[in-house]
Each structure stands twice: as structure tokens, then as C-alpha cells.
Length: 140
Image (tube, rainbow, N blue to C red):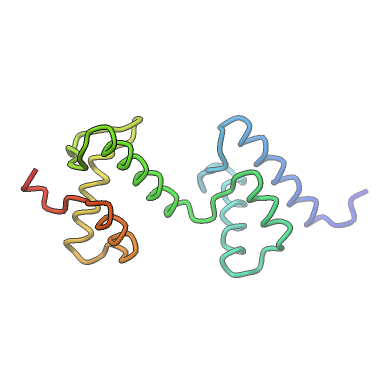
């Protein structure tokens, strides 16, 4: 007999997330991926609002949930840029270039575009500036 249906539903979804991670190697469940994606999105929303129980936060973090997937994607692509720069000796990435199957050149172009339009996050701008990012693609 289950006395607390909501807690049991949470545990069931958490178990599905653990299975997803075991199968996929990460907890990056797309929102469009059946009910599990929606559930994970709701957990992120609750955490942002400070309404997710700290024990649940800890459990989700322990299995590798990323709270801000877009920020994590930016960090991952910046890491690819660092790898490229270390290997090539510069960060002048051609637009068509892919690193580990990821369109790094397109990402670099997007950073330039966002800076030009004034929409690049100031913290990210500073990270790129400190790194020695080449802003003027004409000089490439």
C-alpha cells in the first residue's frame, strides 16, 4: 500500500531518470522525451523558484542533473574551443569546422554575432576576451 502517491510518483520518475542515465550516459532528457522530460523540466523550475526539497536537489545532482542546460552547453562549447586552441595554437575557428561532431565554427560565429548586436552576456564576453578570442572574422 502506498500512502503518499506524490512521493511515490517522484520516486518512480527518479528511477526512470536513473535508467535513462544508465542507457544514455547523461541526464540530458529533452523536454519532448515523453513524461520524463516534462518531469525533469518541472524539477528545474521548482529548483529555480526555491521550491524543490533539498534532499531531492541533492539526489538529482548526485546522478548528474544539470540545472541550466543552456549554460552547460555554452561551457561545453567553450571547452571545445579551448581544446582547439591548445592543439592549433590559435582560436580562429573556420565556420565549417566541427570538433567531436559539434559545429564549433558555427558557435564561434554566433559569439561574434551576439557581441556585435550587444546581446552576448557580459560574463561570457569577459571569458572570451580573457581567452584571447578573435572578434573580427575579416582578419581571419
